[in-house]
Amino acid sequence: MSDTPKLYIAGMGMITPVGANTAMTAAAVRAGISAYAITEYTDYQGMPITMASVPDLVFDTLDADIGEGDRYDPRHFHVIKMAIIAIREACARLTSKQPIPLILAMPEALSDVDQEDIKELSPLTQALAQNCSPWIDPKQCRTIHSGRAAGLEALSFAFRYLNDVATDYVLIGGSDSYRDDSRLDPLCENKRLMVPGNQDGFAPGEAAAFLLLTKHPELALVADGHIIALHPPGIAEEAGHLGSDEPYRGDGLDRAFKQALMHREPASIEGIYSSMNGENHWAREYGVAFMRNKADFAEAVKIEHPADCYGDLGCATGPALIALAAHDLFRTPGAKSHLAYSSSDSAKRGAVVVEKCHAI
Image 1 (cartoon, one colour):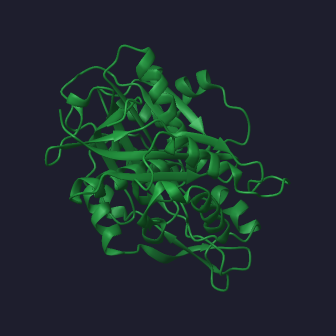
Image 2 (image 1 turned 90 degrees about the horizontal axis):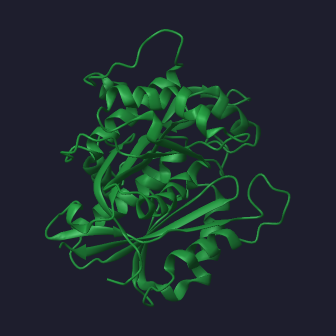
């Protein structure tokens, strides 16, 4: 292991359209199982939208009190329920009864967000505090509103936080769903959704994914004598992002790759876990970043884009990719390092090296 700072995965929790937990999701992705299905949602031409959804029956046995009535719409109910399931899985091994700082990845904000208002008023954090006791305290929650890359930004914040505060753990993750017209309408306007006749659209998905992190390797999750280390992520911005008038050059993801891969041995990355969702834009972006950093990857590097199975997971993308990369390292003898990366519709790009190490 290098001398660079590291955080270690102490727990993982996930629920996606192809699995009710981390292991089920990883197995489904390895098998190439797809949850894509035509839905009742339609675009402006009345064409049905293909999406990937968590089956409602998954929630039938969920023991949670999140209230009824007008406080939440159906999308919020799904987001909250998924988050509860994933956090409970991620924290299942904990014996501590102390609240854990939570850094929540959130959808991209349309304007500046007041963190203090969110801490006090967010229905999500309040519901999590009620149903994920004793681990969640709204006063120890922070949110990052940058969409797909928010989970990697949360990881970057976790590195700074754990170095400054006397705490053993921090929890990062996100829960997201597109099952609402407010999320789908802007995508319809820009013809970005998977509908009949559109060869450049993506399937909206939904999921929650959370990672319990620690700076102490002795507290890490152990499998077959190994633990998973996360190196400091690379965070950068793309000037020519989807909402910008600037020309697209692919510099943002390239810089994120370079930061994440700093101090790595040449040809040491054996797998790439990508946020590509089927839109051509992201494939071009990946191609630019990979070619500019090709020397860092093994000759037989494999590229995984699990959105082919579970759809675009929005702000849950980054933590889900890290968890899948970690799960693959645990189960693959001889495998040592993967790169997970995620790109937002707006400027943010993030990448991180996920490494298998011998347990202490």
